[in-house]
Length: 197
Image (tube, rainbow, N blue to C red; front, side, top):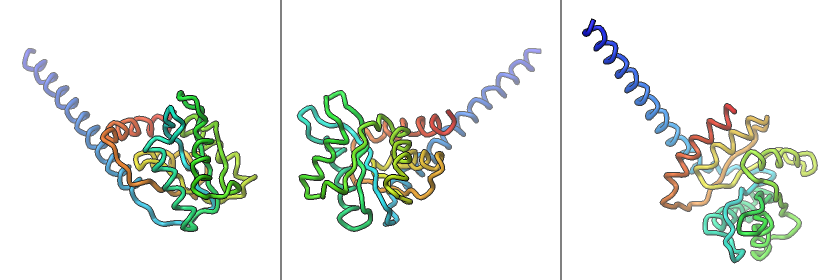
């Protein structure tokens, strides 16, 4: 009886180890794909680019991460890959509308006001996607380039696909921080949360 009990415990321990091993393997595969997907730019053209916001500093300037995102969108416009730019963000705890601050930055860089649109109700990625799709008829776009950090693009594109919009590609600035490792883990969790809930 004791031997049977020990064997059951060993088998249970093996199953737990196998489960953990499979989870770690899946996590690593997902992270590798996220990095490859986010850092790959197929140089596609699109009607419009949506730049997803990040932190605005307390003095109203763009944080380094956000400035890099906006500059990436600016490069898309200057190279003729997109015709219009949408700044999507929310009202940050620093006291600024992120989308408005992003637009101000682009105007200072010489981008015509007429090609920049602002969505100050993009409180999260899902809302940015929904807001963009509500603008589809008025802006007459059939393709989008989503601009964000590389680790954020796989989930962003998945949400567009989930909402029936397939013609979305991504572009990211070559800007990296030590906290990207945390962001990759967060995106792993967020991806499956958004996918299934």
